[in-house]
Image (cartoon, rainbow, N blue to C red; front, side, top):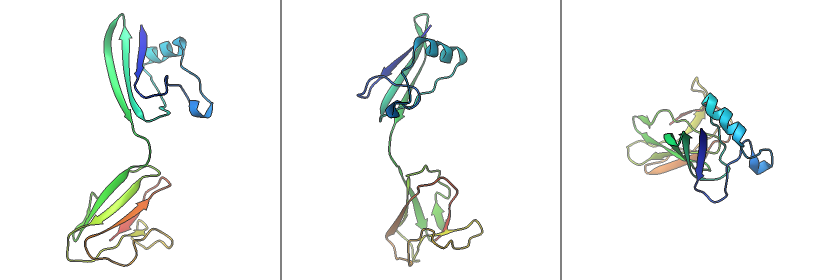
Length: 151
């Protein structure tokens, strides 16, 4: 029984823990066997790339998986209309950016951060005064949490 890894990006083998900070070490046969026996596999990709995994037992492959690791912040778009927002809920990660875009409609819009009761939060994000279509506003989130906003 063995576990094989085929790694596409430049940089060689994957390591456990945080190799980039010098805190990890390469996986060895004993650790690979333990992970296989328990059905657990954890990998922290230190670089962007495509990682292919194949688990082999007795020379026959029975399970494969490919993981695409894309680093960096992501952009999410919320469309603002005279009727509301689409989508209404977005899940993001620290560093991600939300773009509110209003392209059509008869009303002016702006984006204001509010509490869960709908009250303005002093110092919260705001796009400023209401603007005609077409317009857009972007905010980059640095901390995890639940954020509310109105138009």
